[in-house]
Image (cartoon, rainbow, N blue to C red; front, side):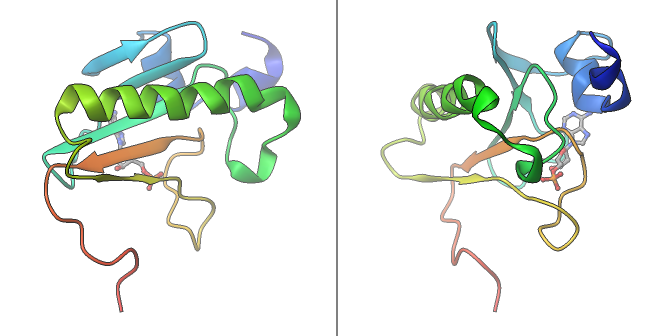
Length: 121
Ligand code: AMP
């Protein structure tokens, strides 16, 4: 890990490097997926790029391979979890107003119950 990545380290970086435990459901050279510790639905998996990007604000063309892989892995997880047919939601929060808590970009794969309107109110 280079110095830049060390400065961006979060709990998700530690999960990617297997330094702390997590229920990892998938990993490859570009992304890691693990169950959210505080699930909001029967299926709630987080997909993260192995190389940390703090948020969508820092995304650049150099990240496109990992970002694309996040979608294909999310679709694969949805099928494997049995939520693909009924539908599911992919969520990427960004920044304070977006409700982002962990500054290692991540995609929530949420499903297994009707999720209602996209935004409250
Ligand atoms: P966000 O608000 O989009 O940044 O989402 C952060 C998510 O990370 C929340 O849903 C948390 O429940 C989840 N989370 C925080 N720590 C862990 C952890 N150690 N393992 C799995 N999920 C976590």
